[in-house]
Image: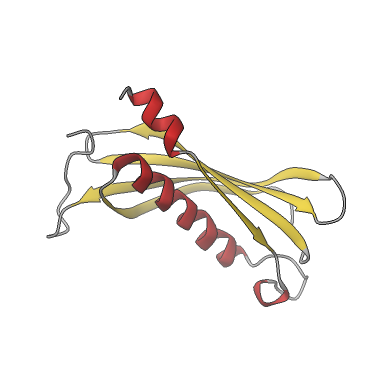
Amino acid sequence: MLLADRIARAETRIFKAVFPNTTNHYDTLFGGTTLMLMDEVAFIAATRFSRLKMVTVSSERVDFTHPIPGGSLVELVANIEHVGRTSLKVRVELFVEQMYCEDRHKAVTGLFTFVAVDEHKQPVPILG
């Protein structure tokens, strides 16, 4: 399979509802919860691409550009952005939608780096 095809097939989308137990005193999604959701969808995309054991080694440039109110829906979209020998980078975009109207916009973006590891937690090549 071509690299471009593997990248396309690894795209991962997850939808979540923003419930009160995930919001702060401003009734917006906690930043830490947002990062957890982003790391999760990035991990799934990395694993779907590599079919190897993957671990997060960094997150960089996570930009929160719009608040995510309680009672809204979020879609997290993860795409492989770069493939190295033992690591890969996954871009995650989080979109927020109001439940009862068509309003939708990008609220958060971030880049997550993963490394493929063996049973001894040592890096292994991703592309065999």
